[in-house]
Image 1 (tube, rainbow, N blue to C red):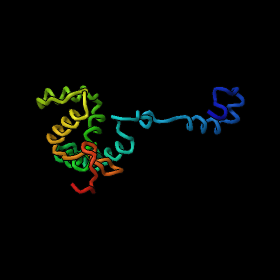
Image 2 (image 1 turned 180 degrees about the vertical axis):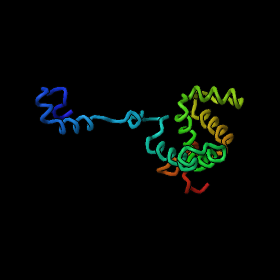
Image 3 (image 1 turned 90 degrees about the vertical axis):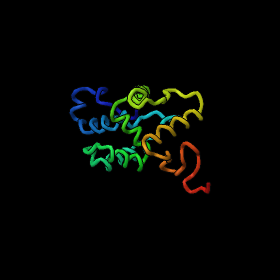
Image 4 (image 1 turned 135 degrees about the vertical axis):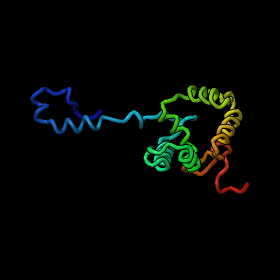
Length: 152
């Protein structure tokens, strides 16, 4: 941290430099939401944000949570599924347990291989009516690795 911080100053010096110290304090603040983990298995913040915006648009600012609105949002961006889980405050294991109990689904909370993960994702997506998981930047289907523009 470059520069001085309010707690390093005497009361008199703090009083005379209050605006500078307020700015220093605000510059040090960051949102925990923006400090998301990265790497394999984690969604990039920009992708999550785009999915959230799709959900917000399709549900009228999160006021119209109907099956139709959610399906429309999921069709627009399949990561809406992850946004919904986050909004509901559910961990992946809790979500999987709910799916198991309510839908008699065999969603795994841990995957031993990429193929099993792809298979389970496909089953889950077919239950929700989604057909692909597209990377918002590259257009690549995350399950198959195929580009939207590639010839199949």
